[in-house]
Image (cartoon, one colour):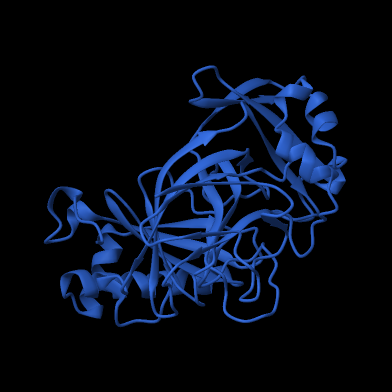
Amino acid sequence: MRHHLGCAPGTVSWGSLPTERTPPVLEVDNGDVVVFDTVSQEGLMPDQGRDPVSYFGAYGVPAGGVLPEAAGLAASGLVPELGPHLVLGPVRVRGARPGDWLRVDFLGFEPRVPYGVISSRHGRGALPGELPGKPLVSRFCALTPDGRHAVFPHQGGTALIEVRPFLGLCGVTPAGSEARGTIPPGPFGGNLDLRELTAGSTLHLPVQCEGAGFYVGDPHFAQGNGEVALTALEGSLRATVRLSLTPAPPPVADVPAWPLAETPDAWITLGLDEDLGEAMRGCVRQAVRLLSGLTGMSADEAYLYLSGAGDLAITQVVDLVQGVHCRIPKSLIAGEPHGTGRLT
């Protein structure tokens, strides 16, 4: 079954994640496909005037080039609460229970507008107090006609950014009734800002409450690892996703439940913590467990293997809880020839 979900005051929250008490805006069966028409918060934020038609009009975008949903949400009574992101959902997956895993297959991404925005504000980013030199600095970037790049204008000319769309925010509803802000990610996923989650990738999430309560938001046209200035190249996306229930993924069946990602050619473990060093250590621990589960390596052997073949990167340093991920090529792991192995 294929479903469609668009942004409207009745289907989104602004700045807060759903809780166990949040009613679903859509119910689907195991294995169903959902098309999410997401809206970026850029151009809607109060410090940008909360008027996307005027905001983007200043960059030459005609009123008809602004998504009607964006203008409608800006004019609605919704206000950013505990974070900036527009959250689309939750989607209830029938039969989902705590202890299950939700497999999220990202089937495709399509920009809904031919432009995006990178911004830095509130003294946040990798260099607070040093950059940016103004309270709010933004750069409007138009997509090239073929959609493969975005044009970044600067005082010396222009530069290109490769377009690699993905959702910065996707997760399952955290357990409990207390509302959480959208900024920090956690074991439920959320604002992971993992640039590897492009079309063809998979995210495995441990279900926290009945129905899973899947949601998406923070659509990105592109992002560099680290997301150092605060935002990625933000732009509204149509995201096509398959939602499936599975047992614990075999490589991590006997370890604490934690998000796990994969691409057609790599496994990706995640570490999250307020301290970047502890995020790195958590990521390495997860990678050791993953290798032990996949290959039968001892912990010592997996630790040594990672030193020779693992690829650690800083996911993001701007979400209060910072992220590190480790990419492990499938083709290099015995029993996974040609990089074709995937979780089923």
